[in-house]
Length: 355
Image: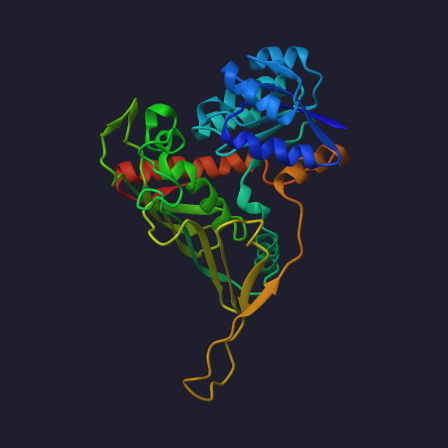
């Protein structure tokens, strides 16, 4: 049985502990948080006996094989490196770090260490996305020419998710002083991974970041200054062009991710809110050379149904259990962080930048 310590017991930790506790080969035996009340409430709920107020104490005293790092973004680097130095496998919530230099230091800490390391790019959990990647990389749709990727949220324009003005879980995402990198860091990390993984590296990009929601307004101790919308044009190493965008003002959408990839022999597309409940199908077309009999003869897309596959939590345990390496790992996390940093640089320079 693989024994896990969870560092950070906020909202996202509930997802992590649930996934690891239901796995037949893992269990969460210890937890750590600087806030005692939150730690005890969490541990009581999930029947975790060992409780620690510092990661140093957890790593020194707890009998664990791995940690799952669910702390806020600014703490990802230091906590993960401390665990690596104690020879613990690490599963880290996204984004991997606050910037590329920190992410690179996390990767460097793994040198000469036979340790499993993964970052939770949760949209990789979609079985259909995994099959879509295989379809594109197999050459079935030919040479890739254009990519269109969008991530739509609406919690700044709708109360579907609650009232962002009164809830800390939303307010911190609008404040750089509280560790937020805005929409770019929070969901850009997903959409850049989602768009580039099937195709390959991005060569250069031109990005614009915008804060529409009352920039500089203060609610409680949150100064609202983080970007809430971004748009980018990208060129891939293979020559393909693409647009990658996201906003929190997408009225009519709760949490919608869309991806379309066009090649010279066909195309694929996928969209969903939740990768597990909706992400089991994508669409494919190679309707290129067919003769059309009339205007009513529509272009044809085929729906591809896919069976369940391992999610990131299962891949992490499988990697430890069988001494293999699953994606997305820290190296991939660092690559995406470099892209995010270059988006910010491009916005500041108002120009294209090389990756």
